Image (cartoon, rainbow, N blue to C red; front, side, top):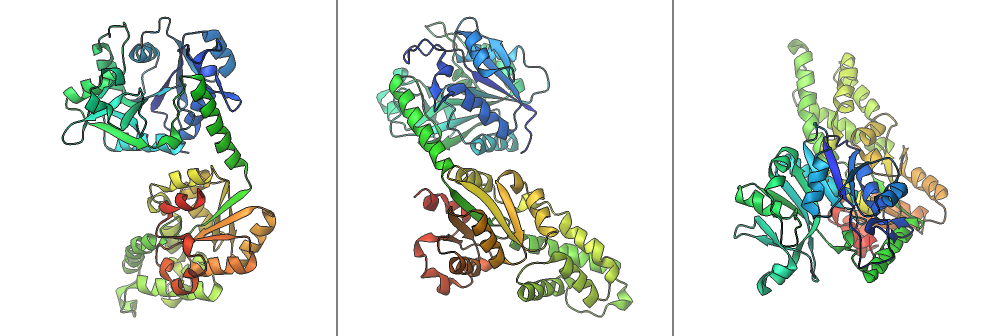
Length: 474
């Protein structure tokens, strides 16, 4: 998990929740046996944010007793709106933060951690002043409408009661999740003017940023990740939705994902390391000794394919040893291996991988199956960060043996095998009739054996891994 120690989170939790009733602070109303606020704070852990400030007010002693001492508490003695709550929190956040994440403690239970990570990454990479999460919905109700200018830039948020009839038709709404540049927020929070009800709205900062010609980032989500809870009926619906989500997670579903080319783009690795192989050989082999006319990398990858076909798996140490024997330069073996052992594998997984794996984990356990040696494959899994995104991993020299052993470990489970190689999927179906194969036709091997495999499971063909949700959600 990547640390976001430079980000502080402010969670707004001071409200009464009058329409829900029950006399509880709003954030202590329960969803699936836990306070709403529990889910918001739990969300921040896999995001990597440890500096948390919970703004409390109504029955603050009960909120503190329920949540415990693992967060910082800030008191908003008078409930004067969301901007006032953030202003109070800013007064106690120590120097060092570069960004401030603001969340509501009563409607954040269904966010995926990957959504918040994407929001943070885009905000930082694009050097934005302000970023917000928006919801696309056919039933915007009383939520503030996101108004954009002719170029598509966010201009402001208009509350439903102040919106024109045309603005009320807008389906993109603000749901109260913001990421601010810390210095900009400190400099502009006091500009906000009180409304007629003497409250200060955080949404005013959007219009202020736009007037300053600042770029405002947006990340749009669907209704799977957001539930507003303002009434008893909405609380009941949120409870049903959380129970369903948790029940799916508890089902005995196992998703096996092949490592090479399904998760890690080994085609790109081959392209990028070819130059390094050539540079190593050309810079160290004496010109007078060079007997080989074609590029050294072509010889290396030919040996790679020969050994893969012979052993039925990738044995990188053996490939390096064999290559240095062929070119008669055994002293290069260690340096050659280091080219591969020091690869930054994070560069070879797609940006959507984290989200995909997280989504799969809502439906069951997720494991990686790697076919190859026990030196190079663990390096890939660990150095790519994939180890933190899955429940477990297994490495076997022989794919068929691996599938048999995993089938024994996860006996009576619903098993889904997601792979780019049709050969592996065909072998799995022969060994375990209960396995559901899902073929991802990406990469060099993703196009092989198409005619043989296509007729077997025509409904489980994907062009890319990002399409996986449309199958598993069934």
